[in-house]
Length: 179
Image 1 (cartoon, rainbow, N blue to C red):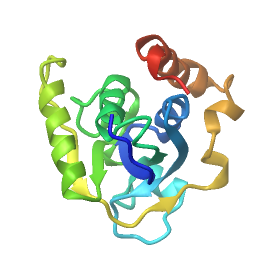
Image 2: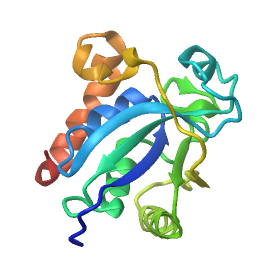
Image 3: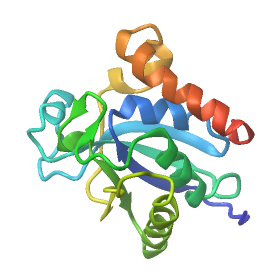
């Protein structure tokens, strides 16, 4: 791994942001994960607007990480194992463009890495990967009740049935990358 001192940011959308947040909070080298919205033209969208598919935004997580402890490439590998990148505008029962698979990039290096990982992961999936790679746009942090949602609501139905299995899969698959 490269030994870099500055933190970096990854912004990923792959279904409900609660799922992604819960997994990435467990990863070594991840310093902060925030749920939010990106990709639509409306300023300061609300959860209700985004989840209704009314704004063009995607539910995303903004991951602040230490590239000396975990590389961007590794974060993307995790991303491709905890959601289905072959379903357009859908993750399980969450349907609509707000749940699409997307990697928002803020540099040519991030774009090149994203495209490289997509090419590598193509052989893992039985269907074509539909994950978009797009330039990062304005970031809007989701409301406070959506931050650390799984850790605060582990017994809530969606968390128990959808989020918990994704976290368990990550813990089993990436035991060496735990925080």
